[in-house]
Image 1 (tube, rainbow, N blue to C red):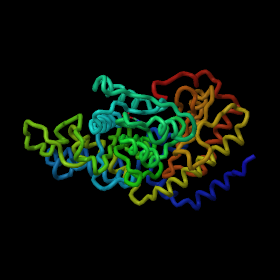
Image 2: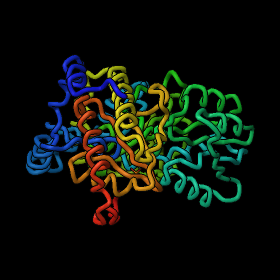
Image 3: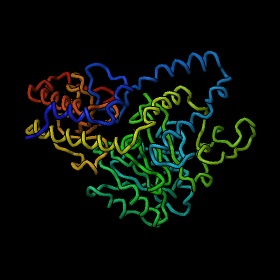
Image 4: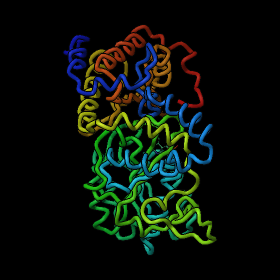
Length: 418
Ligand SMILES: *Cc1c(COP(=O)(O)O)cnc(C)c1O
């Protein structure tokens, strides 16, 4: 039994401090979007900004816009907006490149700060690109650098804490697990790593804009994260990177491009890194992508991440309760932590028929996603979802399961992107 009703959901919406934010997003008619953890929704003000950047700044301003429209400072301006969301000191975040590329830059930089140690630690369940990049780094740096993948042994971070030792150079973890939404205690893990002299690189792909994180308070060394998920920067948006102030002038960037040079327009023949976090830039800023991300981040300008967190936990709790009450007997197994405070901004259920069920849901306007091998993943983005949406999403799922329409063979055809 569940005490949830549509009226109760609507009552919560009526008292939701974040409800007015929905008007800042373009949500297609008839869509309930539970995939903002994979590609955020289009903010309403973005098309005008794109128009302005393309037609005025580029079309009319031409090359003058590098100065006149401040194109050059986009990486640091966008970085400053993100810094506020992740508890980072001013001047310690830049937006550039992709998460994968930034992870490469940060891990190599961190590794170079710990010569004489050989291990880079990560987790077996980490997002594949993170593991692939680490394997590439190990190949590149040769025998002195090994990657060790740790397997979770329980709900906490014990497997990581136990593995840290004097030979660990870098610990590279994704804060919120992309499949299950389980997350690490960033402060405790970082403290233990520092105790043995290791450095930590955090991947905030499923944290930035989703839950409060605090780079400064947790003592994080380095971080990277995604622009197109919870930050709504659009498909292929630039990613970001964070370097703690004490490391900024110590690191030697492995991708020593001219945009990270102290004086790029001197056109000197030798590389001199720029002071601060800017040395981690490489090539020319992607002006269109950065402009969109800059515009999208304005929606977060007056948002308190504690409000986002409270609503995200409440929505996740509601979703779990409704699914378990109304879909009992359909073989769904909760694979996310049941307790909201232990869960990121998503809820995942395992089901052998997960792929087909998610496709049938998408056809009915409820968009979640599927992650191999058997996970149905539903993301909660408090800025543009209502409690009524959550109620309706479970109703749609119930309709699909009770009627058995998901068994139609058209739903089991796999697309390239799942
Ligand atoms: C989404 C995601 C990425 C994506 O990396 P790209 O370089 O943008 O493709 C990386 N790591 C994690 C943990 C992710 O969730």
